[in-house]
Image (cartoon, rainbow, N blue to C red):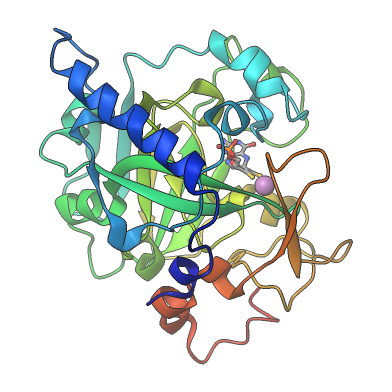
Length: 306
Ligand SMILES: Nc1nc2c(c(=O)[nH]1)N[C@H]1C(S)=C(S)[C@@H](COP(=O)(O)O)O[C@H]1N2
Ligand SMILES: [Mo]
């Protein structure tokens, strides 16, 4: 049994049953609502095999404590300003080393994809964490469709650049657009999710609407939001924080309690939403997903490739 499943048995059972009840209720009423949004989670199939048993963070906390520099650098800026973003229509351009490049409407990308609900622990490099019930599809399903060429070794991602709606982009806090990248085997790993919602809601704007990446064994900054472009590349693509401060933020950014950030420890984290005297917990290697993704890094020096 994966480490992350066994740690939290019998804790906060009430929280979880309240949520499960809410979800059952929602599922019951959803059928009555004509024209429910295409992204509604009633299509999401729970995947307990890829879910933690930890009690999920409250929806209110997940949506009010965010990092999304396109809307400002404060944790409460995204909740305050992200409603200005229009997310419909939305399309994603797929380019680079693949047989089927092209630009596709989000509805078309979602067609035929299995939408799953997966509860992942999410660990920010700033040493806080949340447990988030995402729904979405495996990135591998999309990559399989575009058929990567034999030269495709990495996948690059790009966020929308639209300063009229993204107030943070009117300042040069970081270079725009935000970009990130994964190695092909990381991108193809079944844990790597393209998320379109949280709990029963389609993705809140502040969390990266309408579609964002979620890579649960890496620090949060790898999980790029509001994606408009995906490029398959031969060379390692640029990644925003890695370009800005390569000594602090590696390209891999794998959660690793043994490799500290130069300015603070990564051995533990604060659990967001755990009250006035915030609970701290030890951080696990690869955020608890070591059994699943450890083999991707066999033979690599994780102190050098941090
Ligand atoms: N486009 C974009 N994506 C981004 C960021 C950002 O500033 N811009 N911040 C990253 C960081 S540092 C974290 S911790 C997570 C936060 O995701 P959440 O707000 O859904 O918890 O988003 C990541 N993705
Ligand atoms: Mo982060």
